[in-house]
Structure formats: C-alpha cells, structure tokens
Length: 263
Image (cartoon, rainbow, N blue to C red):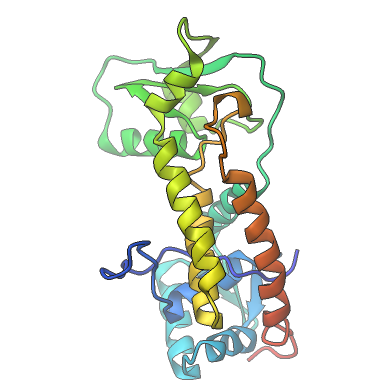
C-alpha cells in the first residue's frame, strides 16, 4: 500500500476544539507519513516535500528529523529515514484497526485472569494494561479481563506470562455486559461527529488533521460482534469513509513522496 494520511497523536489537543483535534507539527507530519507508507522508509527530500504541503519550512523538517533520530523514533541510513521497532508496532496496530481479522462468533468470551496474587512491578502492570487494550479486552474488575471471542490475533508474551486464559459465556444478557464494559453510545457519538468533520474539512491540513482523529478513534473500537452492537453502529461506515478519504489523500501526496532523491 502506498502513502496515506495516518497522522499520529504527538501534539496536545486544542482546547477550543470539541473533538480535541491535534494541530500538525513537523514531528507529527514526518512520523505519520512514515506510518502510512509501506515500507515505512522515505528519503529526506520526500519528507521535506510533505512538510511544504503544510507550510513547514525545510529547515524545520530537517531539525525535526535529527531530533527524532536522537530520540530513537527514527533510524537514518543513506539519506533515508525509517521507523524504529516501537513505531513499527504502532503501524501494525493501525493497519489492524482498519481491517480487523474477525472470526465467526458463537457466544463464547475470552477471559484473562492475572495469575499471581503477588504485587507486580509497576512496569509489568502498565505493560499488561497496554497489551490488553491493544487486544481489545475490557477490565471487568482488577485483574480480570474479557471480551467476545470473535477476533483472530496472537497474544503477546506479556499477557500469556501474567495471565491464565479461559473461554466461557455470561449467564446474563451478553449485550448488557458489553454495554457495561464499553461506552458504546459515546464511541458512536464521536464517530458520527468525526464523519461530520470529514464532510466539513476542505484544506489539506484540515483533512489530514481530521483523518488522524478518525484513525485514533478506530484504534479504540471494541470490534464487537454484530449481535452485541447498538442499532446503527457506525464502525463499518467510519472505516469506509476513511478508506475513501485515504485514497484521495494518497493521490494528493503522490507528487510529494516521489523518491527521486536522497535529500
């Protein structure tokens, strides 16, 4: 897949924006351009051209590139810049959020329970919480996580090492359980507001800023099976809108990302 407008959340939200859309910076533009490019490596000249699309000077982009290499966000080789391992993992999550791998659901839930009663280091607890969020599990209570067993994805070592896993089904209404675990009404309302923002966006900067918010929102979609979703759930429509929007952005960026030099 070619370049896209997958802008990352690297800037503070704008206080006067009800959708909390992040303003574009040289750093966010560079990283998001690489996140949307497969493979995620581009020459400096191409990244400078993307900055020019948003009115960011070449010197500002090059300073940002140097700082990102120093911070471990990028690696440089032969005049090109590529994502490091941490951001490659982010790219994989973004790709999965747009095209989730699902499987038929027959009512089962996957359940994870922290396997030790001993107090774990804060770093382990944080890593587990982040991994569970990436797996789209919700915490029923401290140390107990669950979701419908409708997703096909591997479990990282951080969760298999700390948890014991089960498969089961609730005694009560699973849709009621799902509504208690996820704020489905809130997610749907924001999705609809973002679709409206896509309709209003006109300039390249506005379009890319809104598309960044859409992608961040898709990363939080619980990806529940259809029987557990409220009527009119906008998840699929938001993905379709983003896909169409991405095709437009890809065409817009093609001239800026032509790898015709090392810069």
